[in-house]
Length: 418
Ligand SMILES: [Zn+2]
Image (cartoon, rainbow, N blue to C red; front, top):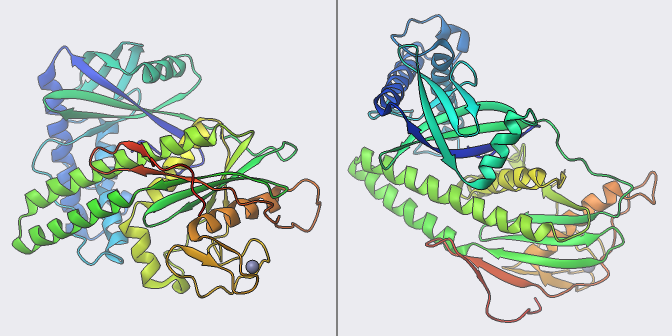
């Protein structure tokens, strides 16, 4: 929820609420749940998520009109997500009706308003507006002030409750997405996201490789496998409510982890002159038969998309443009001789059968990704894009991100060659 894949930038600001009336907020979340549940039931009874059909149905609710519409949308989306997931995940289940008050999403103006940097008003039911003072991180307060000054637009806000306290997560938007400046001396950051690591290589148009960052998240993979086994056991035993809680916990931990990893990556990226983040275009990958079941499994089991989306949104919020390149042959191609028939890739080693060039397989992919973009934006050639040839292969360091504490931990050993 802290990110968006639209062509606009969305940021979530988190605040703790000190409402003058806590009960009303509980009631709001309770009413949102009731409304959501009715729509979940309707999608099932009518076998549709068509918004117009659902709008025509009567639901019993005290929510303000706008908030009711969001409850409908939330329910319809949950069902659509299920249909999408069902094709790749055998154990996906139809969204269940919630049995506890849920997070209520509100529209700006009708649902909530920000009165000043420390006060909000929230429309609860029945048509009652609750005033609350808000406190949050300094960074979020700065962005809230900017939004109040008109630099950003207010989006929806979530009212949620954690450990007895209410929170308001306000989204703000801007449509100013940073764009790549072709006349600049750009640094292309090729990003290769794998099962157990994210590999980033910074390269110049002329083939100079500045540095590679190896973010190792093997521990997260282990943790997710652990969750997977536990969940399978709970499913077998039919312990649905524990299963749901465990899934939510896993989701939150993954989300948190992805934030930490991408934050670390963006800090590293920003040290270079005019960085441009380059990632593989994975859209359509799930439909592509050639990638097959194995790739689908890879895409869905690990937070690939989440990492991509977080990296995109964090880069763009830092003013770093993001570009996508074709994902074909990025791991098989030899950057030195251009050979891409390398079918003998074994484990973590890339070996070119043609010119015998060797490298870490994932670093090799990140180089190809960076150079592919460099070719597209190369200024010296007007027509034919020429993929540069690397001039050097500097050694790189590995940074481990652990799942338990999700702490960053630099490898104690000095920089090592691949
Ligand atoms: Zn080669």
